[in-house]
Length: 200
Image (tube, rainbow, N blue to C red):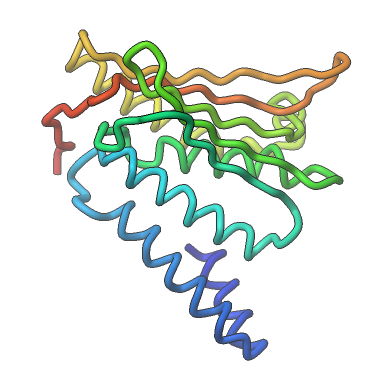
């Protein structure tokens, strides 16, 4: 929030009202999806995709040519499937901040969503510096909290529904023996829609 508001303020000071208005509109949409029905741990996959895309556009405005991205939806997916809020967006945020930002060249982030064995399969892949290098640079200090929170929510949901399980795994990527990025893979049962709310 602080970074986005600073970016909007900078656009206003440059008298670039078009950019400021665009950022403010996108930011309001991001906040709506995060705080809408705040007692619920879940929302529709369609909402998560829109949240992630709006977030990526905001980051592109802020960081300009630092990275490129693509969101690919392959085949027919059930957009009404419930997923933990921000499960894709947080993974994307971590990829940008801890993998791509330290790169000397342009980074690339790819989100792929498809149907696989009665599951929604989501992949977030970046060509960043990798988790080991990020750890050495102490850029993972804040990353741990958001990822741990996601794992806790998934564990909570899986404990309540032993039949329909959500999985999240993180893989390190290598090329020619060196770190070449990170891949996050998420599996959610297609049509997943438990009646669960977080406590007050």
